Length: 356
Image 1: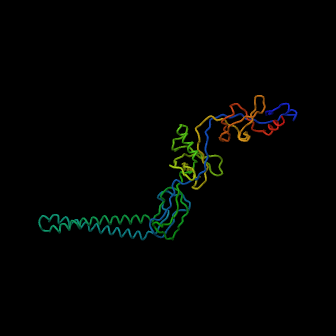
Image 2: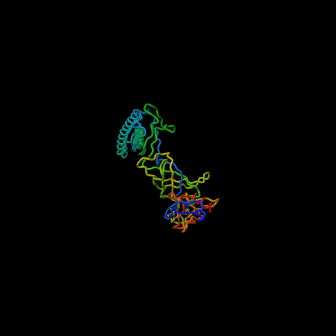
Image 3: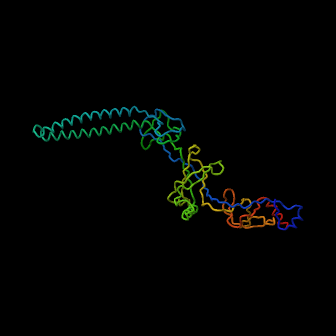
């Protein structure tokens, strides 16, 4: 316990015992300043599944909210019409191949007879043209088979990415149509990593640019800049990520620029839409003078503290405070290492001062 007074004799006349206060040493340590922002978590990939062929939903092959793998069949559309179309296209291809074989044989015979005047040149040209046309018919028939096969494959609606599927918006027995008006069957969002989008104000962005130019911060595009993230209800910022995107222009209406951080989601604790608190390092490490924020007092436009001098008395000291860091107030001017700042019992200091 320390004695704090402005006049020792006055304090003794006022009370039998000097007022007790609590003081703490000024803390000097290496710190980094952080800037805080609000953001939202979004999926790295989000895909709306739509049918690519029309038909009736035959089966939903997953449970609502299930994690799915890329290529896993989620919906099955009645494929009978498309299977029949494929078989018809295959038959047309087989017929085209037979006709092409016959046309090639006839063209080959006329090739041997053209020089013997047994066939006319006109007939020879017709046979050659028929063979060429037959080959083109094969290619067209093969294309029709490929298209029919694709349509048949599209009756199985598969997951385009690894992720978590939403509920099925269209269930078994309902008709779906392909094209621009195709209905959404469900949505799949990736899970392994997530994005955190947040907006940085113009002055903070320029501050980062100045740090980058002076060599005290990240590169000018701020990529790979470490970030710390906290969710609603969490203490502090327990999650770590890195900036992976900085937009190429500020939004004039808000005076902010969009940034994005990449965050690991192996534990599946983040889902799109969550509110997030984000903080970025606002400076390189530096030696800072720190005190308990409750020791800082205000006198109009000035900030000050009471320190304990070598005689154990309270003395006012004007300071220039900075930001909070690690729960303590940075003091830019006014205090020196070794100073003791009164943090408890300030009311008693005022009483002793007024009594003096």
